[in-house]
Image: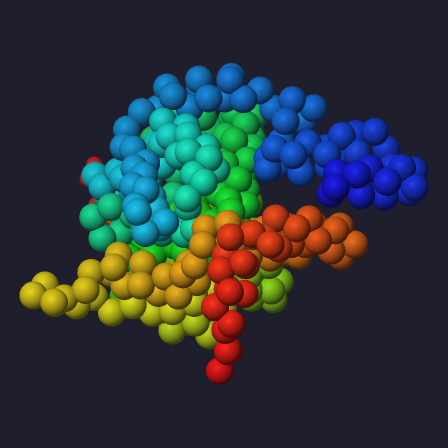
Length: 311
Ligand SMILES: CCCC(=O)SCCNC(=O)CCNC(=O)[C@H](O)C(C)(C)COP(=O)(O)OP(=O)(O)OC[C@H]1O[C@@H](n2cnc3c(N)ncnc32)[C@H](O)[C@@H]1OP(=O)(O)O
């Protein structure tokens, strides 16, 4: 239905073929770039695999909350090329997880992620390869943000450069005390390229985004909360019996939004996503279609049978 609405809208406005094709593809695949943009997925995948190291680990749990771990501790969880490919594969697994409701994205060994692996960056420092890597990561992070799961980045230690961008590809961010999110790109003679600037503007507004990027500002938990980049602060507890780890705290925080049947939670994410990304008339049509998937469904019938009072 969304495709039909888009098609109608573009035909009526005399939309150009390229724009039309791009919009249709974007809606159907979740990706930003495809062959029509000169994006050769296989070619860039092979280039990235030439820079190995680390891994992206996925743990799907019976609770419906999965944990995705950026794992390259000897480089402060910097993204090697093979980790970029790994991330894409983990996102595909999550897209196919019918029982999924939530996702926590964390870094291994008490720090989040220090961005691109600078060794790989040095080796592919020509603009053509840089843009290919950037398209690959934009596609993957856009698909991550569009997952029908409610996601939260658990930021411990540092989230720098591409690591800061990764936090913006989650629905929420929780910062541990002492943690820092910093878009250090300016200090590297760069701007964000993994979609982090566009997403940051949506999260904190253009004024704050300009300050954060222009000043490469270190965002601590207090500033994060103040500008709306962070949705909560977590305190690490001394290791002892009954102590709750930061990951458990993040899962508890998320569970208030993931309580309930998976199709309903996934539907919640879909209607918010379409409201965020589509023009109003298309978002309304999507909302109607998603509504149709839950109306009269098992969770709806069960709720009706229990004669609820919402006091
Ligand atoms: C579009 C994407 C744009 C980008 O992401 S550009 C990359 C932005 N990130 C950076 O520039 C991070 C540079 N690194 C740093 O500032 C510091 O290493 C950092 C993270 C503050 C940690 O400082 P320290 O606690 O003092 O630890 P350290 O410097 O000794 O680091 C430990 C080992 O990790 C390595 N490392 C950290 N960040 C890395 C990175 N991004 N790529 C490759 N290696 C990285 C670092 O070289 C060191 O390795 P080694 O022990 O010297 O072999």
